[in-house]
Length: 287
Image 1: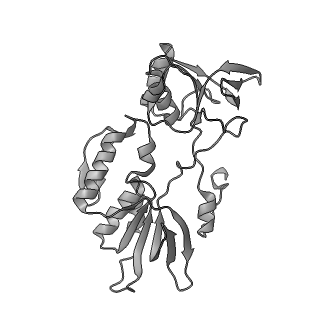
Image 2 (image 1 turned 30 degrees about the horizontal axis):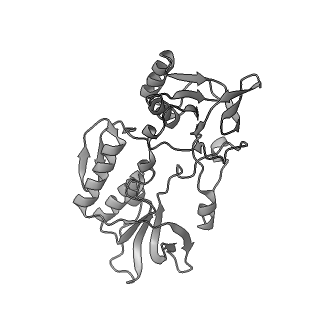
Image 3 (image 1 turned 90 degrees about the vertical axis):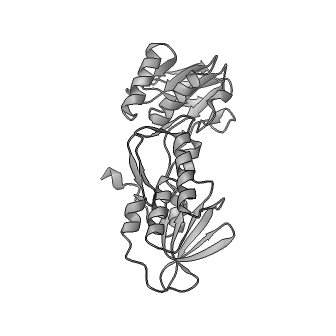
């Protein structure tokens, strides 16, 4: 998508104001990196701003998470032929790509504002600096803003929305909320740690949102008793030593628990987009 976005731009002008860039790219995850490499190949004057490091949100994925399942061509670098790439391997490849291509990425910068200018173009503000540019690509994704459950006790310290170090948890009673790939992979990683009792609470009746391989793995783990799956169930309250669960018939029960991991998807950074002048139609998918 990042590559396609840049290809949609007209050729850069033969001359431009000395303080005016052709492009500012906000975010250097997969889409931002692809856009940046494509723009570099087209000779665009640009800056790439990333609030963390190259890879963006992918760096927060669990260890050994499968993040690519087919070969890909990286602009200006070549084809990555591996069909299955884990998180750590992919980040290593990205860092190699940045070094090999000489791409400059300004990290540690949080963009706070994007303002359209009366004469055309934009003013981008971030990290105490301002950038004037003809175009802006917001490659910020949506996973950085986790969707919360909106339940009592969700602000307690035993609640988390990501899992980076499964090894840090052992001997725990754990409930994982969600039925997608992130919830499945976190459940399996936590179940591998000594002494953990892992239960998955999912409001659905199957792991239809997860990849086939993940569905097979979680079903095998459930069949072997390494993970318990609570179908058609949601968490109604979190406490330090237990959770309250509501079952398919509306009945509520308390379950001993000291760790709650929530993987309920992400929310669009709507307030930031609206400040930037982007109109967001949240009901588009319902039509």
